[in-house]
Amino acid sequence: MTLVFDRTQKALLSLQIASYMDDPKDAMNLTIRFSRLPDGTNHVDGVVMDGVSKQLNIATQTPITRTCEPSLKS
Image (cartoon, rainbow, N blue to C red; front, side, top):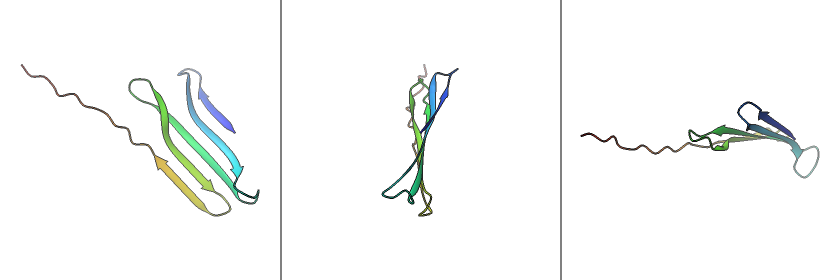
């Protein structure tokens, strides 16, 4: 397991795990990416699971939802 941390931003950037499913021959790598929302909250931005021996790759991207406030016209 590897944690990538940005000391200046004091934020976790990614988490990487190398493991296997049922058998060590069934290797897999898991990478979780983090990013910051405009308000400073750190959240999971995406996940990639790579099943090396099975040639399987699954990737997800977390959409960011932003609320827009209507402009006030006088």
